[in-house]
Length: 220
Image (tube, rainbow, N blue to C red):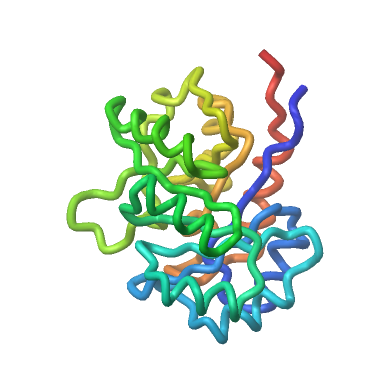
């Protein structure tokens, strides 16, 4: 049997929630820096949350096409373990951000059809991790966290040279099926554990982590 699936809870907005995420058994906590998101934080607020993170819980900053000046402020003010890029950053920009921040970078890639899988191969050559997310609909205000899934069958038998994380429309009810269909060893959730946009539900977080981590995969 494989190791338990690793879980990322994205959109942590307060210190108590950071504790709840750690207590639930998640491995990653996401802090959002995208103004249009209901989960967006200021640097000051993010710092106060991040310094309260339980030991061993990785703090991930979600940014969308961040500028150099923002990155400078981010890594100076907020204790972080990883940067998650959720915009249209080029492979060259991913490399620049890794060098500039000195942090590992996870690159989110939207998937809706087989053609989109090519981008995952490209970014696997520069990023430390990949996030395989549902491609947002045209005109969507948010690059992620929309609660949309994609056809998980597209990922069957697919593997990359770096670790990857499944995202997009996951919730406590469907995460086990998603893991079965894709072979994902890491999963990400945001809106799927909320009672309303930006408001996380502690019990849903517990249920999601339990559903993901107790669903072991047989070694193929």
